[in-house]
Image (cartoon, rainbow, N blue to C red):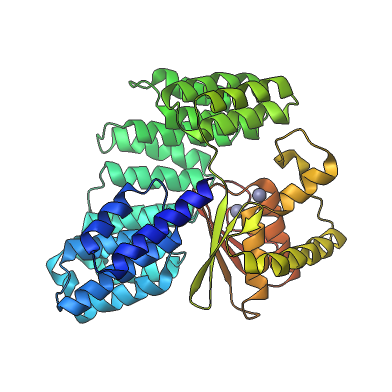
Length: 435
Ligand SMILES: [Zn+2]
Ligand SMILES: [Zn+2]
């Protein structure tokens, strides 16, 4: 059981930290096959205590790496603490990377306004890293137009963009659904700035066409690019085929992706989901048995939420702290009931195993982000937004569910999934259903 593994890794980690064995703890941390909020919080805490007890001041690279760990996990409070620490101790003056690390941290913690604030206070330095982080941060929030504005400012002050600038910009166009702009900047990059696109830039364009359902054009880009397509590119085609119900293309892309990354469970899962959606249950079981044969494990959906200064985790189907199971389940039942009276219908297409309708519905209700949301509604004040971090991509049903909850319960809900942020408010999501 993967749950078991994570729990025992975490207890091993905290054991070393409690014993003051920071070096060994760091080694354990780096070896962990999977890390969650609990493991990283323990690590940051351990480092913090170490620095205090030895009276050492962390140098700039240490601060940058702590900030990036915080960013990956979305720990806003810790991030603010480090921000404050940096300015009190003037760490930022000696290092040009700190600014972009801070912008990155705020963007990844869901506070794009704070990222803007840091950026505005630093942009006079004309340090390309600060600008690039701002553009990538906006991309993460699907703010394509705003990213383009930053880029235009950059051109105005004659700061030369680099390949990372364009990667951020193309990804912003991609997440913002800006088809024409994406193509325009892909060309600008090559013609005006003479930057040779890397495979990641092509990947953005493939994804842009794919999401828009223009799969033939996406394949055209793959044919023309001077690289062999990598697993990310095939996964983009695979997701697009899933979204636009193209079983033939999904089949090809799926096989190529699996060939390139035989241990990556998400390729198998996507492919079997495409078959399931088309009702091809024989093919579903073929993919599943291939997974079993190769001992590839599906990563279970896991969502975390911070309440009362503590991280609470939910694994698809159950709360990690069993004490909450009952209250969360009754709350979920209540929410579903309320939502149904407002027209919510569970999207059973999101359940990719061949079971009866009623059973499908209860499986759907137990998706980890729904459980985290129910917990959030039970354990936070009316008026405060609910922040959820999920390890995988949010499914269409959970997305719809969050939209309705934001309207009916009059709550802002912010979900960071594997790819990006979704800000739900008054029934709408910031991604405008494009993710
Ligand atoms: Zn879901
Ligand atoms: Zn969304």
